[in-house]
Amino acid sequence: MFGLAFPNAHHQLEQAESGRHAIELLRGSAAPFDAVLLDLSMPDMNGPEFIRALRRLPVHGRTPIVLTTAEADDSDLMREANALGVSGVAKKPWTPQSLRTLVQRVLDSPTG
View: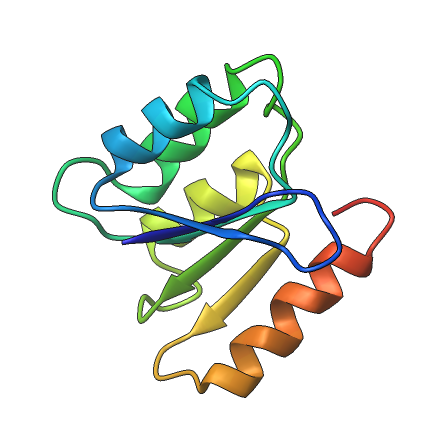
């Protein structure tokens, strides 16, 4: 499942049941999302595949990405995701507060 934050003071949350569904939501949005939260391992596409698809969307190409994962930092998927430009990583098991803090830090960062 994905969480996608729309731009506004309270950050409306959009959810998608798959990577492909999330790309369709993003493609259908004229306004850029503030951030995308996704799992590195998904059934229909992995994190790097999603990131490449996201980066090809003109409105969302620079959207900050927060990954959630249990993968080791030196795994191939993590190296590939980091090379594609991830703004933050929440290692599992995370707490709602630690995830909220990470997402807020990413949103507050001038570079995402």
